[in-house]
Length: 524
Image 1: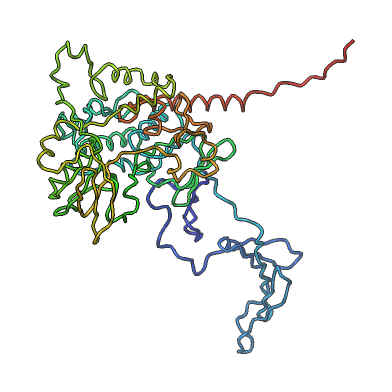
Image 2: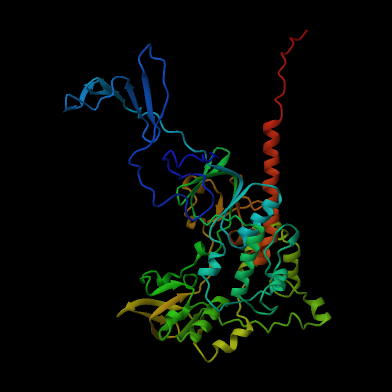
């Protein structure tokens, strides 16, 4: 990386740098073009003439002065400049006996560029998976950069007042040594150990984790990722570029928001995905249709009702209400029959958690059937907040949705028509690599996919060497554990080990001496 010169300000040069330190601002927004800049000069041997070239480093303009009598006027008359043609490359301006030769810059010569920063790994995304993977990469002694706003999905795209379905002990981010777990945070914070966990407590915990485990997150978005020989070139939205041997895509859920087809013709002011809302108080006094029957849909319904909205829920299946949580009250026999696990009690979930790479080994069609049987239920503590408070259309779908008089007119398969001010689609997320707009088309075309989902190796690596995908993108290959924060540890450890292993292999390939070539002796 280029070094910062302490005298740049005195020399009138810009402080904008491609490799500026991580910050929201990378240059002085108030700087202007200097009216005049000091020039450095030196005397050259010109055969008796005092020939002094003056170089303006800012403008790359060379002024060559022929030393002579320094006089501003002669006989009280102001001297007028006279141009002497010196061809296309230069011109001479004479003031009486003093001449200035103006040599035009060579426009074919590019100014020296500042080399971009280089890393062993770059993590795109600063959510639970991105931060955990970065922490494990750093723990391997690798140079790592993380780009993205920490916990942005949780802070800006999930509703205030939301409660986590997972227990606190199943919601820890991961770092080497597991020294920054949720339990340690709870002991040192204002929050009580409770279930369910408020989203505010989890956000504060994750930011605490980031402060200790990955303190140097750069909050700039990545605009482009492309392959460049044996590495990757990333262009950031502020114009900086960085190079990295490996890239970990930990983009979270937002890009994969699934929108149901009947609502495609409605304008954005009438329909939105659930991830587009943070403060549901804006719907006070309005009628809202919520589409979906899982945890997200039912919790949005409760929060909308509590914010003063009238809510209709349209769910294509009957709502699956989960039994009351008894994790701290279960008998020994119950725990033997169905042990506690991060996802939910049960031996299958326990195996997924404690053998997090086993699922990968099964045939893909078997994995697809298992993932397809997963049904998102609604937690029991939402039941009393929804039943009798909202109108439920269970086992039905929206047949048609149109705009009538500036409102949504939804025809439901049960024969009713609901007119509402807005429709919120709590229809989940569907992985589609084409939605990751930061992936350069040339790179995207090299990634082998199935159903627009990248085909991954046991190390979460795609068909492009050095390009990894973690989180929801890896769910089809590695199983439902990676739908939850509980999968951060396994993903982070496996990716970090792979990147470190490839760095060692590359270093060995570079430093290994070439075999000596000996002349073959002719056969006797």
